[in-house]
Each structure stands twice: as structure tokens, then as C-alpha cells.
Image 1 (spheres, rainbow, N blue to C red):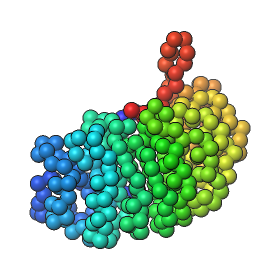
Image 2: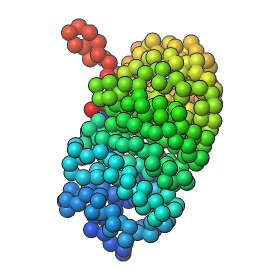
Image 3: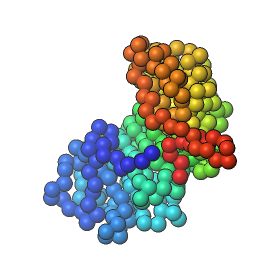
Image 4: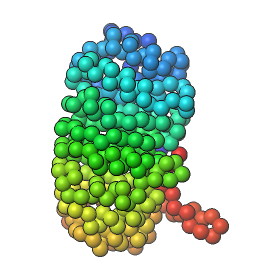
Length: 314
């Protein structure tokens, strides 16, 4: 699966801030999602571009901000300096509603080589933030209380159980969309179904309407847990996509609680048989559920054994 640069964020078109900076010809500060990243042609890091951005743009009106590659040697640096950079300038961004850290594609750095950092300080510094996203190897997330966050999206080829537990222990009463790419153990994805279980409780996040537990090599076990989860009746959409879902996991979904109240069920990138695909469609589509069953994969064969793979790992 190809992970691409964001072209839209928080409902706004993404605009790449020029490393050299300028004031003429820039869009209005609140009309775009501003993206800053290492300028490969000028060999400038975000550290050098940041003060130029603060000088060139009326940051008091910026509502959406994206950090791409922070340097040309990210292999040796995690994102903690970038989080600190933003947090230290919090008073310059009173209107900020959305932040994405690590808008980086494989040509710049593989997803599991991007070393993320604890994002809780961003939430603490920006109480009005409504959307937070990040891409990379997520290793920590301190429990936090935030009254206004509506969307949390963490993309990873391997997410630490500590991150899942930290999110589950957070108080996020306004959270409507939670999307976690769990990844594989080989890249640090060690979260178990037991770690995920608190996310499936009713009332954990009272406003939750979309839940994505994706890109897991334990997708069948997650599907089995979701099949009877108390959180499901309150959802309008559910994603168990991008992982190693087989007929066993789908059978559990069909045999569990009703999913006909959902508007959308996303199972794309799966290992279901043709017969199971037909059964899911027959069970849900007549009730008006939009089901994504695209990317029907076949396991690879190694030494006579089937190998099931996630969409995003390295």
C-alpha cells in the first residue's frame, strides 16, 4: 500500500510553505493547511524554515498545520524537537484546530523508520485542537484529558502497546473518530487484544462514532473481540482493514452482534474467500451498509506454509 502526502487536511487544501519564505502571493492564513518540511533542494530543515514561517504568515489565523520530514537525517532523530518547537510557539497559534506530524512518504523515509514521540504535550498546549494525526513508529502516549479533540489518527507499521494503553487511559469526551494502524511485531507492534479491550468498552469515549483498528497481523482476533464489543452499537462506521483478516475473523463478525446499523464497514486489504465476500455483502448491503471489500489478497507461500501480510509495515 502506498502512503502518500496529504493533499487535504481538516477540510482544507494543503499548501507547501516555501523554504525561502515570502509574504506576497501566499494564501490567506486560515484558508489552507500549511505544510512545512525539509527542503531537499535548498537543504533546509524545519528548524531553519520555522522562523521564516512565523515571520511570513499571520499564524494567529492558522487553523491547520502539517510537519513533513524535519531533516534529511531523520534516521538519527525522533520528532521530539518538532513537538517542542510547536509547543513553545503555542501562543502564536490561538486558532489552531488540526496538526499532523510526519507527513512523510517512503521515498523520504519508510514509515517504521520514522521515530515519533509522545504527542500528549501537543494536546496539553492546544486545548482547542480538534484533530491530531501522526505517521511513524509510535512508542509512547501519556494519558491526557482533552475536552475538544474529535479526531485522533495514528498511522504506523508497528505501534507500541504503550501507545494503545495511553490512549485508552485518556479522557477524550469529544472524540468522534479514532483510527489506529497497529502494524506488526517486527516493527514494534506489540499491542495485544487485551491492550485494545478498553477501547471496546461502552462509554470509554462517549462521542465515538468511527473506530478503526487496522493494519494488524492479529486482525482475526481483533474482529472476534469487536464482534461482541459494547462500543459497536454506538458507531456509524467501523474499519478492520489493511490487516490479515481471514474467513475466521469474518465468521466471528457475522456471528456476533448486528452490524446493520452501520453506514460503512471497511474491510479493504483482506484474505477472505469469494464465498465469504458474498456472505458479507448479502448480510449487510441490503440493510444499506456500504462495505469496502476491495484489495482481496492471496497469502504468499513459504516452505509450503501460507504467509499473511498487512498493507503497511516497513
